[in-house]
Amino acid sequence: MTTLNLEIPNIGCAGCVQAIKNELTELEGVSSVSGDVQMRAVQIEFDAPATQDSIVAALEKIDYPPASA
Image 1: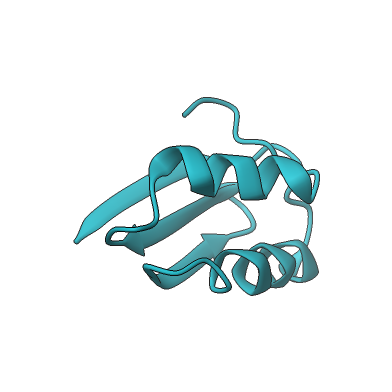
Image 2: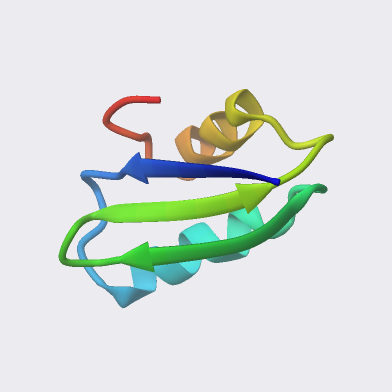
């Protein structure tokens, strides 16, 4: 299991975190997604076939690009 911590500057409310959770849990291999609105950050736990690149691409697709990946 790999844990990925990303800063997402566009997070502004709990709805933003929920949108990210909804999108990322659709990816095969993603087992959990948690977010912190105040920190504007998410933590994703995943295994193959999910990859950091596929997670970042999914975030970019829904207009929540990470600050750095």
